[in-house]
Length: 182
Image (cartoon, rainbow, N blue to C red):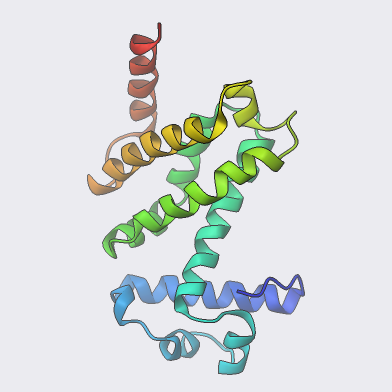
């Protein structure tokens, strides 16, 4: 994916991403073609290929957008990370549901596992939530532990149809963490 900051390219990238998400509501991801994506937009085929290499590239861009929004919220909001995670997931219920329907939620986990360790090293330490939580402890394993644990909880929530209150899930997790702390 080519990351131009040109306003026209940004709009085109968003239009293509929205088209893919719309098509995923109607068709399995595996059956969607680049041609279908382009037909859902007002853009030319050439424009698609100026921005993306493939539909997988579009999906990666969508996931990276989610991760970017999530990490921005983590560093800007003065909330505990668990609250930010659950708020983010509540906001993106529809997209998470689409990913689940297409058996692709694991792709978000893979992107998080790649992105978050790097993010934890480069983010301004004064606003880095990982630095605040982990202090001098080894971050790579702790990030993997946290992402894996939270990810499985969120996957269970999506798998159960997102009917459970995120507040109640969060409270359950907090109570459990209290019980296992030494």
